[in-house]
Image (cartoon, helix red, strand yellow):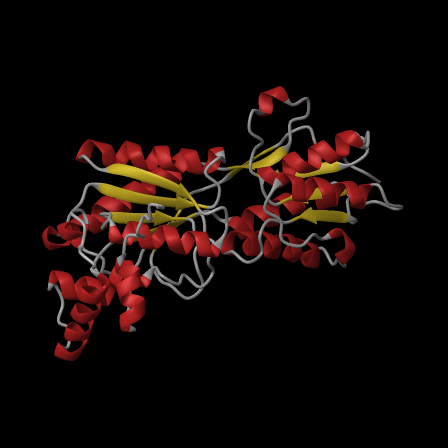
Length: 341
C-alpha cells in the first residue's frame, strides 16, 4: 500500500474556494476588522470543509507582531540585492527583527507564491523589488497592516514607500558622455523593460540621443534582457555584423558583464575599437583589465533607508502618505571611453 501525504491546506485555498481575498480570510479568523455576517459564515464553512486551521505563526495576527521581515528580490545571487539586504539587516537587527530573503527569478507566478507564504507567516514587514509591474498581491499586506517597502523599482498601480535611484538621470548622463566623445552610432543593452528600473534607464538613453538630435538605430537597441547570457548573445550578434556601433550603453552591470565576454570573444578592444559605459559597476572590477565608466550604485545605503522605513511603519502604521526616498548614484570616469572624430 502506498503512503499518501496530504497537501496542507493554506489560507489561499480557503480564500479561493470562498471567493474572497486572503486578507478577508485573515480578518475572519483574527476578528481585527469588521466582516459581514454572510461572508464570515461562508469562510468558516469552507475552512471547516477543508479542515483548515491557522498555524501558530499565523495566529500571531492577534498580537499584530512577528519578528520576521520578508525580503523578495529578482535575483538572490546578485551582489546588489545582497548589499541591500545587509543594509536592512544593519538597521533592524538591533531591534530583534530577522530577515527572510527569497528570489523570484523575475517570475511573476513564483513571486506570487512567495508573497502568499510570507502573508501566511504574518511577517512584520515586506521589502520587495517586485517583478510584477501591476503590484498584484501587495494590497493584501496593506489590508492587514503589514508595511510594504519597495526597493530599486516600483509597480505602476500600487502606491507604497519606495527607495529608488535616479535611473533616468544617470542613464542620460552616461549616454551624454558617449555623445560628448563624438559617438553617434550607439548601441544599448537593456534590462527588463517591463519594470520601472529598466524603462527609466531606456528612456534616459533615448532622451539623450534626442537632445543631441541623433536618430537612434533601432537595430542597435536590444529588447528586455535579464541574464548576462542574454546580453552576451545579443552583443556578439550586433558586433560581428557589418558596420557595428562605435559605442555601447549597458543598462546594468549584468548586461555589461555579458557584453565584455562577447567583445573579448570577438577580439574587439575597449576603448580602441568600441567605447562602453555601464549603469552599475562590475563585480570584482579589480580583476578586469578595463575600468568601465560607470554609474556607481549604493545598495547598502538603499538597504539602510529601507530598514529605517520598515521600523517607522511598524511603529506608526502603514496608513500615512507613502514616502519616496532617492539614494544618489555617482558617475566615475574609467578608461572605457575614447574620443572619435
